[in-house]
Image (cartoon, rainbow, N blue to C red; front, side, top):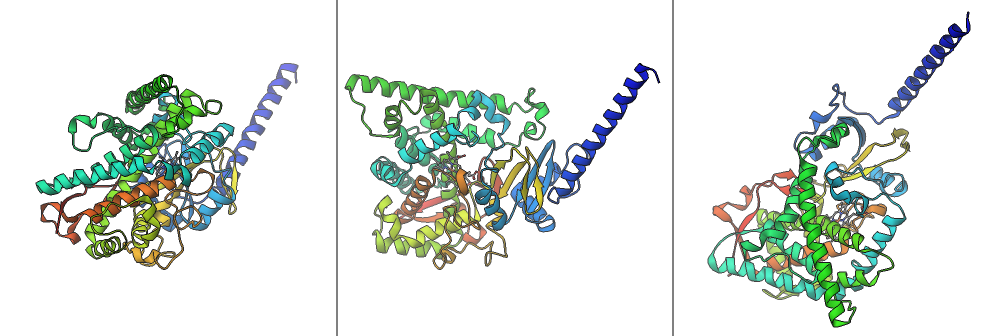
Length: 493
Ligand code: HEM
């Protein structure tokens, strides 16, 4: 054999060996992948998702088990559907599972590079989260600025009072969305972003809402990242416009505040923005603007859809509404406004909110990711896999919950199960190191807004719909929403 022949021979042998090696490695990983349904070429299991992926994945888990793998286009997804496995990935191995799959739309304005929601667990993420939790969401901070929120709840009641006088229906989700927008904008900047009574002031509300709409659309690019450059549905492009408008708004509000502080020669601590500006060593201007964006996006739709679902359940089951009203009348006094400090004395109202979060979690899937191969219960979750914890399925598991699909707040009067990330059968805020940092504010807002709506008015469904006829179907957008918006008429007795 001449030297060229020898080189060719060696080259072919090495290439074949390498190919064999990678086939063996692939088979080994595949065989350890969690079980899952059979795949179609190219699209894998995408068609199995349908328009209610929380339900279809719960159904698939009945066949394939509480840890299951799916192929969604080019993406490998591992779906977790039991409390024991949720505990494994969110608590026992939470560092390995704490990465995020970033929706392509959130690459607009590079938001994923600055955002607590999307950054991987890192020094920067830790420091931003710490700034959030200690300066915004600690009990003492929330107590200190509750007066900013009290006024907003008063305005909601006044708005509903006007509808009551005029005998017209309130679109509960929309009123709750405007209120949570103002509750958060007042906690942050001491300003209103919308006026419940004037349609002309819908502009900022629409900015935030449009982002929710885009973020909630299924995006082909998320399943076929090769299409990223093209952005075939234009979602990232539109997101860029909407995010840009909000960032400009926050930039303007920060400029105004800096100007005011210069004029008044004071660095007061009246709201969150003052506090953040006073931390100038720890957080720069860009991160403050991006943090505001995070807080509006994560905190408005989640809170308002929870209020809407709770009201819907109460108008669907008047018996529970009656009990909630009785508790409020006894503890607060009929028609009086509820304060955040009253919450601990209202166990039934708290149970209603927990039961609402069990049966209609605002975020039905926790969206995590692994960056290395991770072993779970003898399976391999392969590097780069998306990890979806099906919070919705876990909270309706008949093996855990009695009459799981029935709304029954009483179950929480006898049980110590809570939503704060310790009880893995109920994790509407997630658990572990990525648990929702806004939880303390969210619970205050949902309970006070819901309690105020119930305590100040009687309610009936619009169009003479009987309670048992109310459509309780859901649909997935950015959050799990009511498919038909709830419209109810307030009245006084
Ligand atoms: C009922 C209302 C709310 C619900 C159900 C909710 C639920 C959640 C869930 C499920 C997560 C993801 C947890 C995980 O991946 O493991 C999350 C993350 C987050 N939430 Fe909330 N949330 C609510 C309200 C709020 C509010 C009011 C704020 C702030 C104003 C907020 C700020 C955040 C942030 C910044 C994150 C990202 C945390 C991180 O990735 O490290 N949320 N929330």
